[in-house]
Length: 164
Image 1 (cartoon, rainbow, N blue to C red):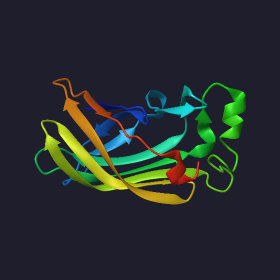
Image 2: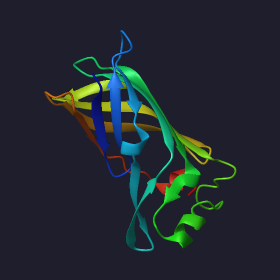
Image 3: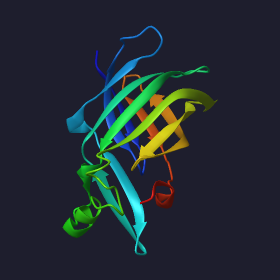
Image 4: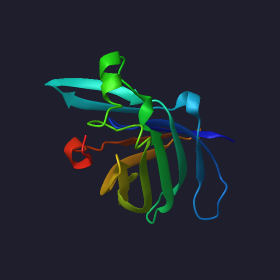
């Protein structure tokens, strides 16, 4: 049976299907046509929303009181889209993503803690434009009786910390 996980957050929004493939953690496979990574940023005093349209995710996760797993998400920085051509072009330049030199951003986590009822924290690293910082991504995960899972999280980043 294929089940679905939706990750909904200002930075990332992903729909994932999974099959049990590991004795230690369930392996989740991203379904690209139902998946997205979205963001909102403050730019010149206005909220700018968009998507990073191309990415690959390897997710192994089982919750509970002692969650286990690992996550590796690679994001194509050239796929930054706001629907505004001028801004999308600027995002490829050196003062934003420097997409020619740094074509991938990456989030990796291998440490998870339970923080409450269906609530967890993923401790890992986020690398953007060649700069890596430790991050903790708090999230909730609810799996319905039909096998559909909903994950919600929010991560605020400082663009200056990544030289953007």
